[in-house]
Amino acid sequence: MRILLVGEYSLLQNSLKEGLIKLGHEVVLIGNSNGFKCYPVDYDYEAKWLKKKIFTIPRKIFFRLFKFDLAGLEYGFRFYFFLPKLKNFDIVQFVNEAPIKTTKRIELYLMKQVAKSNNRLFLLSCGIDYMTLKYYTENQSYKSILQPFFQNQNLYKEFNPFYDYFEKMHIKIHEFIMRNFDGLIATDFDYVDATKNYSIYSGFIPYPVNINKLEFKELVIENKIIIFLGINKYSYNQKGIPYFEKALKIIKEKYQDKVEIIITNTIPYPLYIELYNKSHILLDQSFSRDQGYNALEAMAKGKVVFTGAEKEFLEHYGLQEDEVVINALPDLDYLVMKLSFLIENPKEIIAIGKRARTFIEKEHHYIKIAEKYLKVWETN
Image 1 (tube, helix red, strand yellow):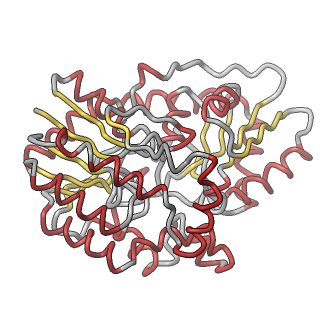
Image 2 (spheres, rainbow, N blue to C red; image 1 turned 45 degrees about the horizontal axis):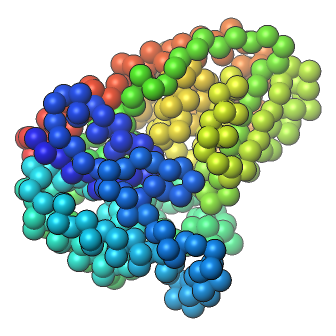
């Protein structure tokens, strides 16, 4: 089959592409390089002109006045000129309800152009979209990345961009998708409850992980246990970073001779990877129900990861006894307790790291996951 993947946030579509190619399919990925993360794509509509330094001040002024980044216009403009190359695919899959990140009107126009020139259309629920935003807002006690905002409205600046999905024009995009797409796939348990009652819901498929690119090294603890916390200032509260920071402060005082703590803040991706490779324990996020891509990659390398692992995740994979990941909660005492146990029982760190790698190989292998996508595409 000829398959077109639109948009990339976290190497999800890249890893899926690699699995599909292994299975003999022709795959094209169009996306932007996602800023400093520089994700590989076949057709790149990253804004290059309007992100030059000379436009920094005009962009800031325009954003303050109209709440829109001018670079989004360039995304749409560049995507438009790729349209002749985006035709006659058997399957088109969008990573999100707004993968191009241009104005809503242009986004809808471009999606319609892609839709009318291809065969079958699918959508991933990956990150916040209209469906998840609606569900989280209506169920504010539900563990989600929006909980910090529900608890503290002063965090408006960080969370405000999500509410673009409630704009009238975006709702038109959502409605277009519901009328014209063949399927909707949830990518982890943060999105299942929010999407499962929609008519085009096609089920849950875990993230694909190319384990061949992620070397597993059994953890060796010599002098100190190394704990890593990588902060992204743009998602500081969404990921529950304040809870991790407070917990690490207590842990540092309690086990100063036993631990080394590495904290980074919005650094280039290669440096981030270099530093986290040194760690035994990685603190990812405390408001999730399942693992995101960052956590899965760390697990594949054999790290002990604090992230989402709620009841539905455990039940789905039959993980009631041996932990493969630590379910992080926005609870300071709980986080300190879990970290203390690991520091005082270093053999358990090594054991969890081994189980984490085995879990990724079994449940997230990129070729196995690609086969699941093919089955959904063919049957919906």
